[in-house]
Image 1: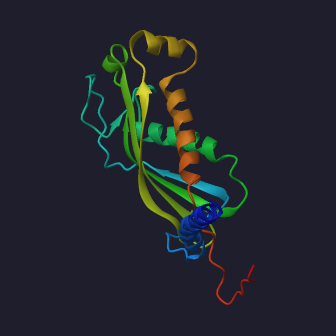
Image 2: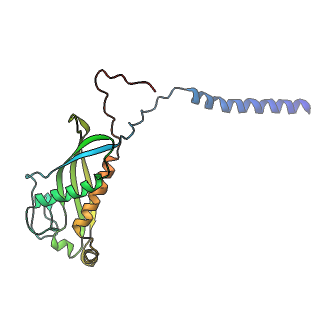
Image 3: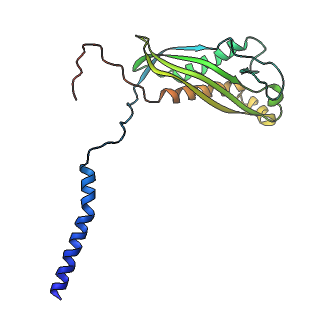
Length: 208
C-alpha cells in the first residue's frame, strides 16, 4: 500500500512538472511580436488651414439626392464654398481650442465632400450629412510632415419632417449639429498616436 501511494505521488509530481515546463519556457522566450505604436504626443495647434477647392461641384437643385460634391441649405443662398469653409473653421477650431500644450503643429484640411440635405429631403424623409476631407498635420516650426495626408470620412444623421422641425425649435439647426460633429471628429483624429519630434542633428539623447 505504501509503495503504491509513493508511486502515485511520484507520477503526479512528474505530471505537474511537465505542465509547468512549457509555461516557464514561454516566459523566458524572446518577444518576437509587433512593435507597439509610438505613444501619443500632446499637440499645440497653432494654426488651422481649411481649403475648399473651387473644383468641387455645387448643386442648388431641390431634389432628394443631387449628384454633387457640395450640397448645403443651412445658410441663405450665397457662396457655398465660403459657407462650408466657415463651418469647418468653426467646428474644428472649437475642437482644437484646448490643444495648446505640446508639439506646435499646423493642421491642414482639404474638403472633398460636403453633402447635406436639400429642402425636399429635409421636409420629408431626412437623410445623411455626408462629409469627407483630407487631413495633414505639419510641424509648425519646420513644416515637416508629422502626420501624412489621410482621408477622413464621416456621416451624421440628417433629421427630416417633424423631427427636423423639433430640432430647429430647440436650436439644433443643421449648422449647429454639423459644427459640433466636426469638433468631435477633429479631436478623435488628432488623438491618434503622433510621433515625437526627432532630436536636432548632433543632439545627444540621454538613455533612460
